[in-house]
Length: 255
Image (cartoon, rainbow, N blue to C red; front, side, top):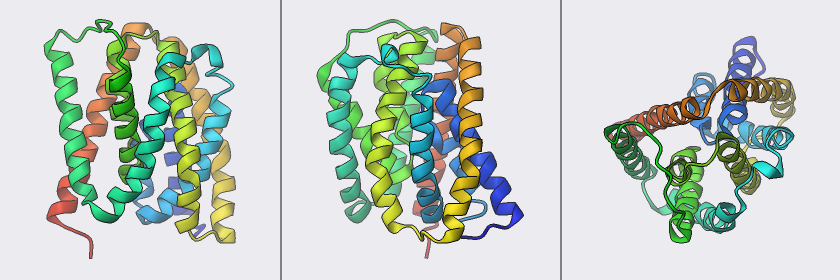
C-alpha cells in the first residue's frame, strides 16, 4: 500500500470524518467517509484499511458511550439479527448482485425519511417490537457487509422508539462495536497486509481518536430535536450515496 503524501492525507481525512460520525451519532454512517478513500485506493484496500481502525474507534468511543447509555432490551434482539445478517452478507456477496441490494436499501431508507418528513418531522415514540429488532439487525448485518452501510436499517428501528440522544448513540455504538469485530477478520483476510499497510493504519489511529472526540463534543452541544433531525438528514445522505453506488454499479459494471 502506497504511503505517498496524497494517500496519507486523504486517509487521515476520511478516518477523521468516520470517527467524528461515531463520536457524534454512535456510528452507522461510515459510508460518508468511504468515498474519500475511493479517490486514492480500490474498495478492497479501503475496506481492509478500515477494518482495524473501526475496532480502534469503537473501543475508544466506549469511554464515552458507557453501559448506562445502552438500551439492553433492544440490543438483546438486535445483536442476534446482526450476527445472522453478517453471515448472510457473505452469501449475498457471492451469489446476489450487491448493487441490487444497495438500491433496495436506499429506496427503503428514502421512503422512511420521507414518511417522517410528511408526518411533520417530529418524533413520536412507538413501542418496541422484538421481531422488528431481529429484522433490523439482520438487514444491518447484510448491508454493512456488502456496502459498509449498516446504519440505515438500525436507524429505521431505533429512531421511532424516541430514545434519548444518549441512549440512541450508546446503543448504536455498542451495536457497531460487535458488528465491526465480526467483520474485521474477513476484511483482514482479503487485504494485503504489508509493512506499508500497517504503517498507514498506525498513522490513521490518532485521526480516528481525534474524530471520535470531536464528534462527542458536538453530541453534547445538540439538543434532542437537533440530534434527531441530523440523524434523519444523514439517513438521506447515506441513502442517496447507496442509490448512486447501486445504479452506477448496475449501469456501468466494473470489468
